[in-house]
Length: 203
Ligand code: MN
Image 1 (cartoon, rainbow, N blue to C red):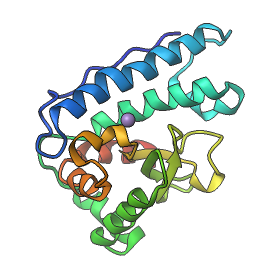
Image 2 (image 1 turned 120 degrees about the horizontal axis):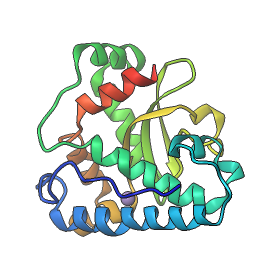
Image 3 (image 1 turned 135 degrees about the horizontal axis):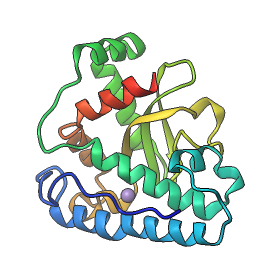
């Protein structure tokens, strides 16, 4: 079983001015590539039947830290590229209704997600995910963990539909220490059509 770096669905400069081309280039061709390479190295030493990345992550406790870190890194970045878009998009009315029902308002949802992402100490991710009761929730995870993983607290388990990388490598070239400016820019480039598809598939 070997994994490959997926094609980036847009050019390195497509998200300018929100994410600069050098950050995109390094993030995709160096960071993401190294997660793929190191995941494949880890799996080469493991007698596992061919399976999906999702099922590896759901049982990642038994596969060890290399699969957790690099498999998580591969999954998270693959998701991240797809939920960003050079075109400005809006959530559909049905997703907007679900967000309003769960969080009170769209603004309140953005505030809660932003606060979670800004407050995450050190390297990690902020997530909007669908829990076991088909409910939308927000959480953060450390390093390359995500809500699919059995190593994540059960209260934060589910299917991620929107994720924000808050590792410094995701923003430091352009924003230096200003993580909150990076998060503000993120809201300008969310691909809500992709989020919606992931939400519909996970409910
Ligand atoms: Mn990253």
